[in-house]
Amino acid sequence: MDEFITLTYNGKEIKLPVITGSEGEKAIDISTLRAETGFITLDPGYGNTGSCLSAITFMDGEKGILRYRGIPVEQLAEKASFKETAYLLINGRLPNREELTRFSVMLNDNSLVHTDLKAFYQNFPRASHPMGILSSMVNAMKSFYPELDTLEEEINITMTRLLAKVRTMAAMSYKISRGHEIVLPRPDLTYCENFLNMMFDTPVRSYEMKREVVNALRVFWILHADHEQNCSTSAVRMVGSARVNLYAAISSGIAALWGPLHGGANQAVIEMLTAIQKDGGNCAKAIERSKDKNDPFRLMGFGHRVYKTYDPRAKIMKKMCDELLESMHINDPLLDLARELEAFALKDPYFVDHHLYPNVDFYSGIVLRAIGIPTKMFTVMFAIGRLPGWIAQWKESMDDPKWRISRPRQIYTGSLKYDYVPIHAR
Ligand code: ACO
Image 1 (spheres, rainbow, N blue to C red):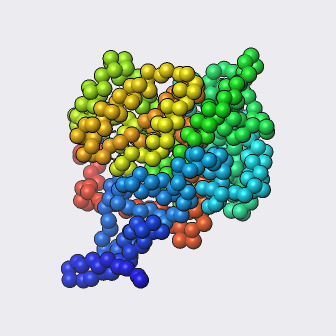
Image 2 (image 1 turned 60 degrees about the vertical axis):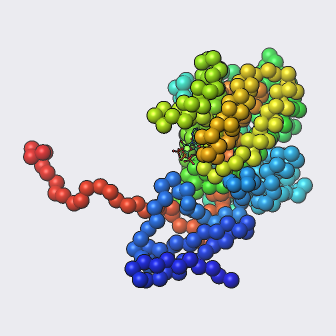
Image 3 (image 1 turned 45 degrees about the horizontal axis):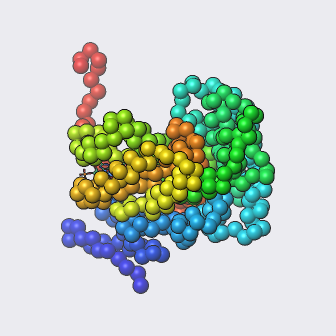
């Protein structure tokens, strides 16, 4: 039965349809509101605004649920490969054996990058942040691989190219930053193994592939693969709505992810833990500072717009972090500090009342450190993981016959009309 909300204004009644999602979440469809009433809605930060209908990812922030195409993230983290997860997000279902083989072959065939891109890298100032470089490089890919068309096959090639080449480019940037020879992708290695090998293999020491490290990277990337309409995904959808090419849309997502309130938090957590450690490991002081409204300091890796309980990804990440460090016999004092900080925060009435729990970034940096990833590259690792989600969301919007350019309105609060004053009279 169709459901409506009735809005009464100045004696006039307007019926607004209620949209119900497959998991029962409800929205008021206000698309006729302005035409019928002259009003718009105002929702800074979009905390109450749904920007689209989407069949990709379901999350319930109150219950701590996250599912990709209906499959709980816990099951994917335990059983799936990152490649399968990417296929699932983009195509809507898990691949069969033949589809997975075809996808693997396409990823392998597209994994080399144009050698001219190397020169592009070398011209960035040495201190450039890898996220700035990656965003520019992905945008530049349009010039190197220009033939994106609206044909289904072309779109598939572009999506595969991005998944295959961004991983190669990330490892290449690390090698260049160290002044080392680039290591090329190999067809006999899996997606995760290839990345590790391109990062860490050198002519003087072959990279020793450890099962637990490969597994940690697989889980890390699966946990980051999509998260519905977050800041960077909304950027991809919004920029994409102007019908720019996929590279430009993804490049804008990378730029948004860079921010410390979003993907940049994984780097910020390690910097924060290091600073607390230098300050004598005083967790109580850090908690007090984070509550002080006159202090810009926030507990990085804590809090989330949607999760008002423990982030399900953080639960998996924390467990994996413990197991990884134990199996590698690593004793990282930052992990002890993180655990202590979490225990302090979860007991603190401010954190309890504000529903502030660790998010995915709180333990992910410690995992990446154990793998050997430099801190500056943490958010790049997030970006590689998020690529399938950005691509899936862009594709879903492309396939939507009702897709319009994203163009929010505003309420103007500036000065009323007044006349131009010539410079001599000001
Ligand atoms: N430390 C201390 N206080 C916090 C924190 C935090 N990490 N996060 C939120 N709060 C407080 C705010 O001060 C505010 O308090 P008030 O209501 O008394 O004024 C309240 O909680 C709500 O905070 P908002 O900033 O309004 O929440 P919002 O939903 O806009 O922001 C965000 C969410 C950006 C994640 C925020 O919690 C934050 O800044 N966290 C730290 C950065 C971080 O870890 N980001 C990664 C998020 S996960 C991801 O993007 C992959």
